[in-house]
Image 1 (spheres, helix red, strand yellow):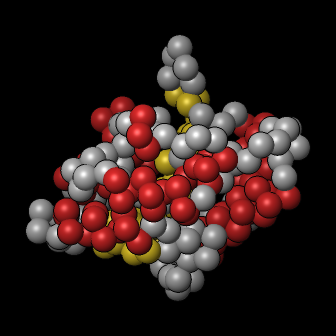
Image 2 (cartoon, one colour; image 1 turned 90 degrees about the horizontal axis):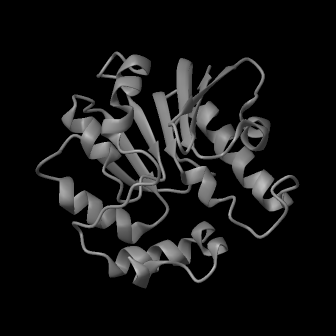
Length: 205
């Protein structure tokens, strides 16, 4: 792992870093920010009772979340990541064992999907990677604000009425709510964990 760690945290927000990292890692490598699917499976099943729901995975990386959800019965998962190197590796890895999953090289700030085309969108740490610029966390740079707002704008555009955006992060509400409080939506926040807290933000359209 040490060979692929960035020299500066800001590199987590660059495509170049992720392309280089995924090029070095084997196809079988995986890395999960925060919780594994086993940790949150009961919550996911509660929030998404219909396993035929069309689910958009935002910045999938090589996390096992998609494959674990697929193996739990959620077959209609569309994965996106802006690293083409990663997407090709994941497509090849899963093409026979999980043939119904889709893999697309795509920037979450400019999704190529039609309006109203997904039931659920999931972000597990992707927005956080866009927040790694050196700055006062209470007053983030305008670029960070714009990037995060563009992600949420795009997610709300592609979600159907009655859809849901699920965002798992260590970011506390006073740092995240500004991006997620939107007109004509409701926001629910759940605190997870004991010694170290994570937060689940649920935006319903």
